[in-house]
Image 1 (tube, rainbow, N blue to C red):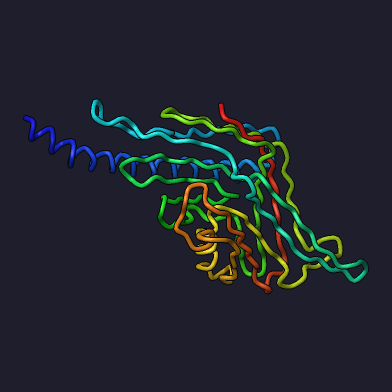
Image 2: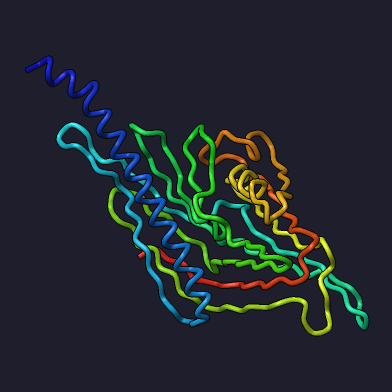
Length: 270
């Protein structure tokens, strides 16, 4: 009996808990992905005042009495992160200029404090869903909302109008979102044209390596992304509370029109 228990504790239990942690990772990735889809759908319907909720399961499954669940934390955007969209416009009857819109709050994180599998983070990051394990390679799970079709581009810019606190533990956190404003603008308009090659999306994020790898793998985006950052910011490995990288995405010069949708949500933990 002693040998059986020793084998269980040293082999069987860690293997099963590793599976439980991985299943929890997948569950949270799906929950964050559903939140991303809800936010875009809410903005698409332009129903100001709409309230949306998404549960986030913080704790994994344990194996009592020998192994307790591993916990998690949901929190807001890391200090210093942002997304900015800029493009140049020109007119025969007015001075040329640059339009710029910035979101300094359009992200949330779920830190998974795994003990048996590597600790990890699943994040809603300015419309993209990103997953990363401590010491591993961050990757984009669901694409950022930047699409190019022929000579037209569409960009969705989410903004959270307030700071999100943090909730930790083993229970289920309920993220709440209320759409407070949304506007959609298409350029060229009003006699203005786009300056060729001027459309840029600049993301400052702890997941810069994931953004850089994804954008440069997309033929439609011309693979034109660069990154500035110290240490592992642009190349990894991913570290909790690690450095931010600045990813600059320049859309193809062949684009002649862009549709920009900006949606502002109040975000809360219920």
